[in-house]
Image (cartoon, rainbow, N blue to C red; front, side, top):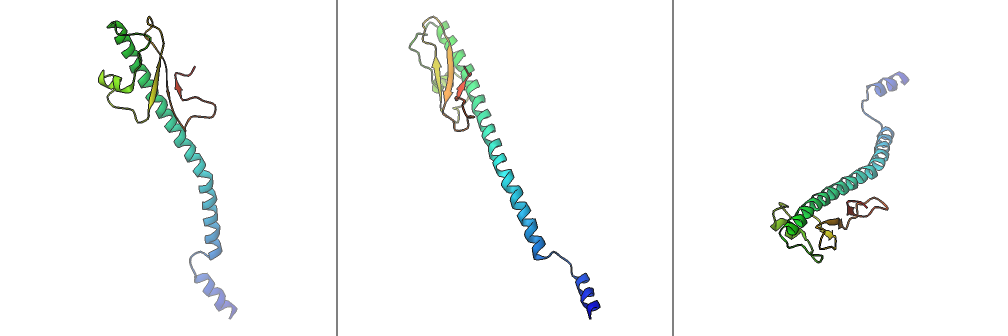
Length: 133
């Protein structure tokens, strides 16, 4: 009778319930360790995208300021917006987030100091500003 029982056990194929629970527990632990890393990579990628957009806007605003100065329209009270850059065809489309362009307040210096924006993706202790000063 014991031999019949052993023969039946050898013929059974598949996993026991305990084995399945152990495998599922290991998968849950691995996923729990992976999710925070993926979220961190997404934030870093978003931050890099925002900085790239700020760099593009900074360069376009510098060009726009130089054009205004060359045309004799530059003054210390000039404000530059992204709409101005699109109208001047220095940007092809409006950026996905709102950037503020800070200009030098001098009638003799056609320059942009920096570009700033609001970001929840910025690393701790870092201002959302381009170029960093």
